[in-house]
Length: 247
Image (spheres, one colour):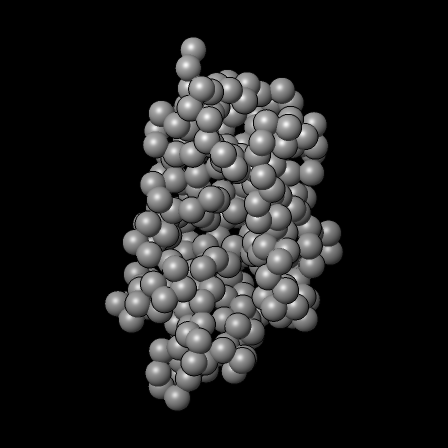
């Protein structure tokens, strides 16, 4: 268990624990229908080395989404093509991973506890962090073992997160701490409590995705022992050209 899962396995776990509303294989792409749930569930990913970019653009517009692509390190040639077509770089991200056993720490129940489905107060906290009904629906779609996590300070709800397991990997998503309670160690509490839950369900690895620009979160996670094991980024159309939709 000293070698972390490879990038394709981590990306598969990310997909399984934060699933799109629908999928379609088209012209060498995996197309996702996001239903308003954000980039991760809306972007197209290549299935072959030279997928048909115009066909993907047309298909995404047909389902009411602006063209958006998610690429990994092995997609350098495709990345260059999209850049030449006017697609801007968005949200370069890393998947960080660590052994569950190195992170797990059972918290006091008065400070953090797992439960499913989420309570109304948890939905309110997520809403403050921009996690609305569309992203809550993503959590509901995740199959297999999953939980919401509620962190408290002085018996008051202060932070939330979602964690789901895919095989031996548990993925942590949607961590949000109320502004009034940031800097009180709740991020670390949530991470270690999630790892404790993951260990109880049989997971061996804890992973999460974070944008490279989120220095505060990356520093926290890396201080707890998580290390980068995969990366991806998005290419998003910067200017819409209606002429591209014409035959």
